[in-house]
Length: 80
View: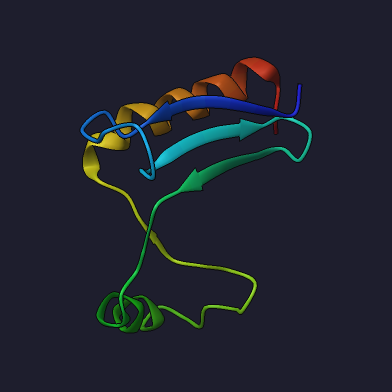
């Protein structure tokens, strides 16, 4: 199956907005979100470094249902 679309941010026009998918082959939840600004990155770095291969993304709290659904889909597919 590979990449399964879950949802886009419900409060946007449907393009260029936060999105959630489940990749059952890679066993990952895939998220498109807004890039974190430098102030947020600095606060995140207080917990530890952020490797070049990783990113900090921001999602509106209204995406919680989409993230829960992605987790539920991953569970149903046995993606663990």
